[in-house]
Length: 239
Image (cartoon, rainbow, N blue to C red; front, side):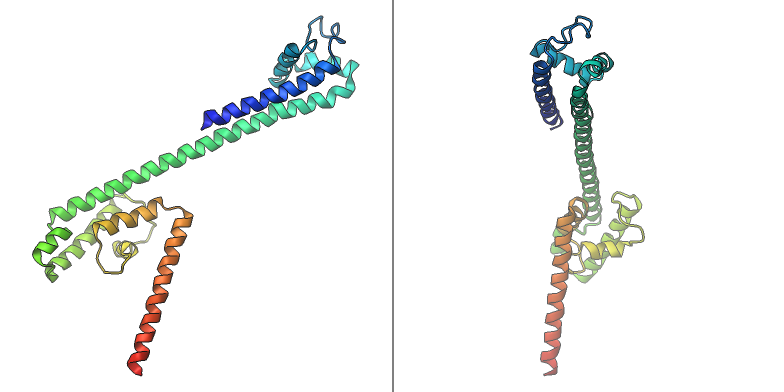
């Protein structure tokens, strides 16, 4: 991407040099040969482009502009305009390309780092749950008895606390393990599945502003629906 942008900048610079070279070649030609120490700076198009390339690099600015000021002062604004476009304008474009490429690279690196942290958290979850024999498959084998479910809730609390203590995920300051469980428990079942855990962290870590806003509005919509249903249920009970 950066090389493609740099290529367009070079093409733009060549076009600008060509346009000004044609103008100066027609305007000056070989008229100031003696003033340029017998060097054909603007005698033909190739020499004119080479001269303007040197000016763009500010390599021969004094040697060119002093004879121009002495014999063709009305061309001075054209040379200043060329320098502003070719040198400072292109420099700003190049800086913009570099900054944009650096920003994209930083964003990609930050995303990869978040993915690594997410994978570490998922691996830790799976390891601790299986060590205690409290995975969803194990619970189904045990018939989802209350003792196993209580132990699973305690295990989930301990896992989240371990993730926070090891700073695998950079949660905001002041949050507790219970707060994180409530945050990730999207269906409000008071339990976290492996899918809920990973998907919840993925939404938080990798979601952009639009996605997080949609998630927040979804939660608000669910709350409004649940409140409405609760009010209707109370009304029917009283009736």
